[in-house]
Length: 437
Image (cartoon, rainbow, N blue to C red; front, side, top):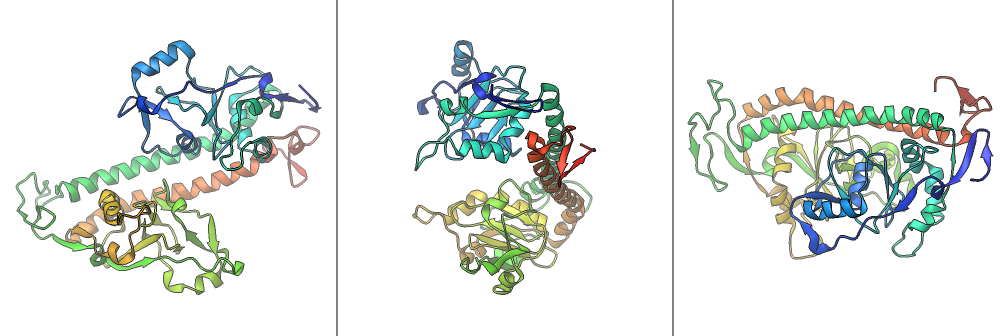
């Protein structure tokens, strides 16, 4: 222990927890299904409340062997990313079993009662923690956080009761964000179930309200297989008023960038049904340099270079970079139908983008020519009537989550340090206390 601020005391991490990693798992030990095996990218996703894709697995037998010999992470332990994108925390709160990759992740366990796991989790998200981690990493090409360095990081801790109070304030915001994310997943799944039943299985309501194909509805031959009578094969270009390939305004002119309009890139789309926040925004000048690249609300963005097949809806007038083709649906074509249809043919899109080069690339002309099955207009309208309220709620929940995240992030530096407090312990806000927190 070291110096203290009022009732806050300085510790090294080695003073109050064990710091280690996992037992090595070799590539040959991966299996197709079994116990999830987390690397840095899975921990980063879980830390940010995102869904996991393309998980690795180890066998149940291997997991049980490790569990019995060496132990496994339990709820309340913390994993920290240690290579590449380092210093990202994940507070373990799992219903099922998992294991993790050695070297990629540091494991904080057996946390003594001078420290609260939730408080530590939020501390790692603070600028103070990021600066301290940045100061002890090693390596020039592949930067890494080591176990030995982690042991000696200094942290100021208030009394345990105060840590729990601070963590409860921040976790209440995160709990609401998580609830909104779960609600959005349910709403999307419900709409997707209808989409698949109607437009993939062809069991949309017939004139009598019965499932079309199951009730013997007439099917006709097409180049994409059997389709309902009255439907047709067309292209993405046929259902679009316009397909727009984005463009990046000159970055040398900083006046092209500001806060006037969202500028969407592929990272803004990952795990987002709607894009409600972007890393960069354009100025009015930047927008006007390429005004024909502007896309309206409910356009569908599709990534078509490098990371191909990511799909998101646009929540407001926006522009994108050149890695994204955006579909502006024509006439009665449903944006929600386009969104689900493109997600459903992701493998086909990736195949179109595979040209023998190492980088996947699907240009606008190729994208517009992709063959699709086009239903009748009345089904577009029926899907819109069912899905619109759900997608409106999804968008509103995502916008609320951004506001909640901003509140949490503004509170974090005030709550995580004694310098953010007055003598009476209240939080400093612009030099004064905030008696509501």
